[in-house]
Image 1: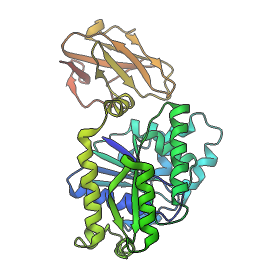
Image 2: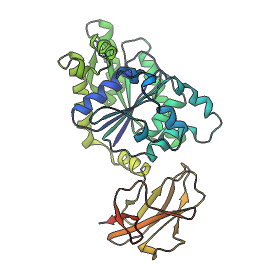
Image 3: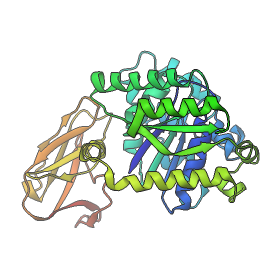
Image 4: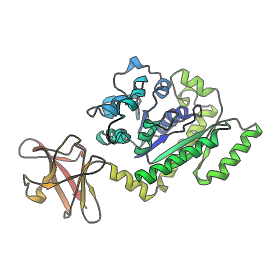
Length: 357
């Protein structure tokens, strides 16, 4: 799963146009896509024809309600394309969470608790580097930075890259930047000069695909459709099909560190070279243990430690083969809510299953 924020603190540079049309283009490539509208303006939601009266749960609830998950809040745009909508209430999140600890990790925690059967998650960010954008960047392994033909564009890209440096230095979180030339009319000399500057400054970070200026984007958004559906033969539709193809072609080039980062953020057990690492998300628990056949189903189990991000974790050396297990959460025996592999037990319930190859 690749999680990609679409961000730039400069307004009017094509963030929502990029997020909505790229999501639709990826879905046309038979990728399973989730688009999260993380902007209080709700433009990504409007671009698909939804108004606030059309939904009851939104991105706001993912930030503030621990029992609301992505699968509760999403709208199905088409098979393989889901949208978590947003409305003006999202603008209250920063004030509500002002005094809360780890408020910049709320969105990450929400996605971690959710069932995420997606190939791509795109997050449309507001035109500012505030709490909402920090949440999006801290859950993402990549960021697309759309750049429009404006005199302030280079400064905006530089500022966002400075933010990425802060995230790496202060949070130990790396985000791979992709600079996207957006809404360009290639005829004016000024645009050619800006493209040359972007190529000189950002080299490999600059995407090969360019999104050309066309009125079709506004027409498509006004009709509540992505451009690949509104006018599949238009230049804009071709540009986003090319962008989707360019990004999917990069999948074979993802670095091991990026993949390891996402494995570490997901729930459930993962097999390492020397052990099995169990990771569980029980935010209100006072104690969590894991028990199973490997400890004769002891009621004490193996204690798990709470990490700084609120998840519970422990490592156990297991032999090859199938191992059944359960979590003991404040005395209650529970199967792993984020592991679909289960087997029936003698008590009429289910045990979770991990296979060590």
